[in-house]
Length: 345
Image (cartoon, rainbow, N blue to C red):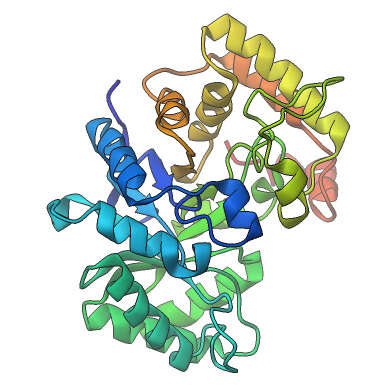
C-alpha cells in the first residue's frame, strides 16, 4: 500500500490522504472516555503504524480530553524528526472558566497557541484551525492575530473548522484585501450519511482553493459495519453515549447506506469502513480524511482505504443510497438552473 499525498487546498503543503485524529487519546470526560483512552505507550505504537504506512499528519485540539490529547501526542512523537511530521490542532472552544478562555480573540488565540506548543513539545504548529466561528470577535482582530502568529513562526498554515459559507468567504475576502495569511483548510464533517458539505462549502472550496480536512468520515461511528438494520447496537458501541453530541442521522438513511456499503464491500473484498473512506477520497476538495482508532486493529483496517479505487458503478450505488433532498435554495438551483449551476464533480 502506497500512501497518496495531496496539496492542502491552494497551499504548497502536501498532506497524506489519510491522517490520524487524536480524539481517542486521553479519555478524559464522558464523551472522550467513550471515544477511547489511549495512553502514551499506545499512542506511540499507533504513530509507528501510521508512519510505516506513510501517514505523517496528526490532528488534535486543545479541548480533546482537556488538553491531554495534545500532551499524549507530544510525548508519542518525541525523538522523531520534527520536519517529517505534520502537526495539526484546533482552538477557540472554551478551555477554562475565565471570561476570555473561549473564542477567537487575540487574548485567547495567543494564549491557546502558546499552551498548545508546550503540550505538543514543539516550537511550531503546521496547521492551526479555528474550531468554530466566533461571532463576537471582529474577523479583523482574528485574522491580524493569526497573521502575527504566522509571521512569528509559531504557525505555518491556518484553517477553520465548522464554518458556514459566509463565515469563511468573509474571512477570505478580508485576508485578500489586506494581504494577511489566508485560510487554506476547512476541517468539516462529511460522510456518506452526512453530505450537507456538498451544498455550499464544497463549491466555495473549489472556487477559493480551500482543502477539506474531513472529520468523522464514518458518520460518528455509524459506518463501522457494526450497526445494521434490525440488529441491536453492539455492546461496545459508543453511540448510546455520544450520539447526542454528534451529527443526527435518520435511521432509514443510515440503513439504506449500510445496505449499499455491504453490497459494495462484498464486491471489492474490502471492509465497510474501507469502502466508506474510499468513497470520500474520490470527492472534490478533499485533501485528507481524519481517521480515528481505539486500537491498532482499527487503525490498520482504516489504512486499507487507500491504494485502490471504487469503480464508477459502485460510486453510483453509494451516491444513490446516500442522496437526500437538498435544503433551500440548493434544490431550487439544481431544479431550475442545473445547466448553469451544476453540482461539483
